[in-house]
Image 1 (cartoon, rainbow, N blue to C red):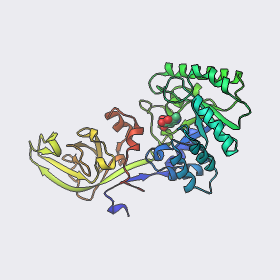
Image 2: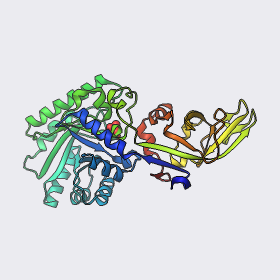
Image 3: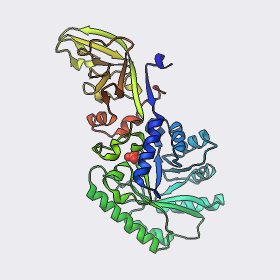
Image 4: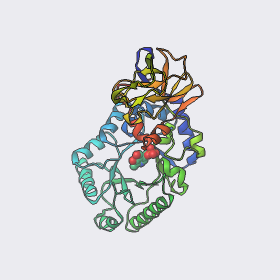
Length: 374
Ligand SMILES: Cc1ncc(COP(=O)(O)O)c(C=O)c1O
């Protein structure tokens, strides 16, 4: 059926489920795996990912926004799962919506706490909430200095059902010492909170990178996205857990034209590639409008007929070119692999991210809506 698609994503739900089991085994019994499936499960498709993970026994999910949460609840009405958003609600209306859809929200500031108390009163329900502490990410959460003022306002009898306290690491893949310091600040913050009457709740801090580099940060739960999708955090691909995971996503495109150009001729806008020899150019039906970054121009490997060939010339909106000179059997109709495996040739999303000096998260979340998910 995919024969008519110019380019498409192949999603391997068996790999996703296997990864979930491997991550759960790594965590050991008694720790909760919160699967992070925000941004449409990093471009993989949140509803399908949630559905497959539910079948693998995962029942805790995290998205960024209420919109994302509502999409999941509406798409999977019969399934029982816990669902948390990362954006703290900023209006009573958002709290009401969260309550209506059974969404657990973050309280990350003094104002947020006051609003949550008002929302709980207005909705006449004990709202399930998570307290975020800022230990060095400087994004969301109570700072160490705000813990005392928080405790002054804290009312243990307020109708809020505290589900967890958590923090988020800023440099888990690059600076284990700073990560340990964040963990120390987190534990100290929790100690102060509990001494001031805040209830004992599950604690979590680690995302994928922290899980690998700082095992003492596993605590009661983790919030894991990348590893479930079979992608290693930057620089951590050799970790034994990463070695046991399988990428969920492959991205393929069709060869729509092949030509031979003479030595000296340019390829694509700005002629940023010039042939140093008579060159066989294969044109693929995929471009930056599908999410293939222009930044990979003249840099990325692309698999064709089980071999790697260099991408050449500026990536266009709907097309890009490959130097197929050394793979003479390439012809129109062939399938090229932009991410994934083709025989012995493998293109990893981590490799492309490294070429762009970005994270794998950015690459996969930018995969366009135009590419079919199969
Ligand atoms: C607060 C929070 N927790 C967990 C994650 C999951 O991170 P990863 O996909 O690296 O596991 C993210 C992702 O950006 C996040 O923002």
